[in-house]
Amino acid sequence: MSFDPAPLFAVSLIPYLFFLFWLRRSEALPLLAERGFQLTLLFVAVTIAAAIAALRCCSAELVEIDWLHGGAEAFLTLGNTVLVIGLLLPTTKKG
Image 1 (tube, helix red, strand yellow):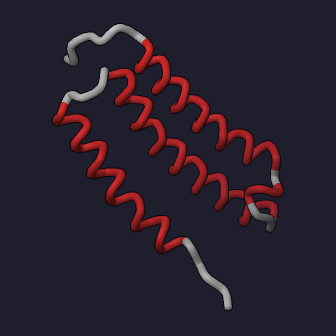
Image 2: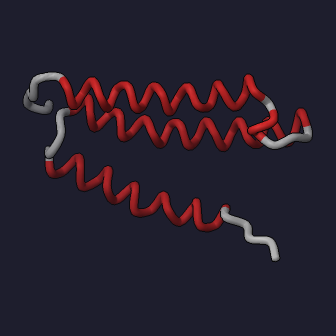
């Protein structure tokens, strides 16, 4: 039996978008930390594009094409770095 996780992945974006909406309205975190969470969506978009590119141009899964996989993962590193810096810096007002 084969299970395709793609629909579950797509549905999981809905609660994350609600989280980002709540985060924006609540002003619970510094703006830079909020940007780190938002960059996670950029990572998801880049990963999807890289996976499609790997399938179309190389007839392979993303994990098999190191330079594409590493490039996509770099966006996760960027988002996590921005998030941590935002949490470590002194709190300032948004806006």
